[in-house]
Length: 111
Image 1: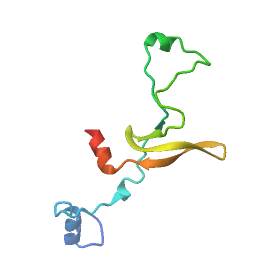
Image 2 (image 1 turned 90 degrees about the horizontal axis):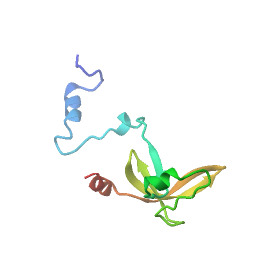
Image 3 (image 1 turned 60 degrees about the vertical axis):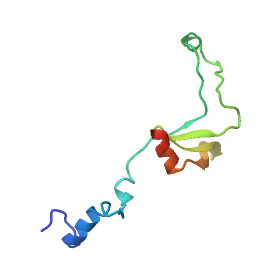
Image 4 (image 1 turned 45 degrees about the vertical axis):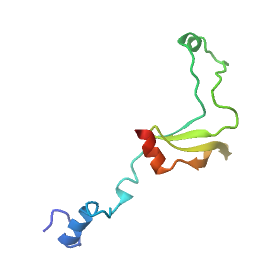
């Protein structure tokens, strides 16, 4: 019996395992669909000296470099994947994606 339990013949298993080598990858994304990732939204950024940071207290306002009405950055595990806007649905915040970064652009930004 084969090491891999299946009803497929061994030759079919071998061709599936090595399909990527033949230039026609057999992508089975089912194996990663339940892997959790962290989704985060960035409204904007600010750079300030530690002196000013230590002076912050309740009610302080920190001015961000991004203007009101500009889109948010949407990150997955720290990688920019989209831009969006805040929406409120049933008294909860959400994000509506307005622009999705292409896979090739995401890979370019990783370098």
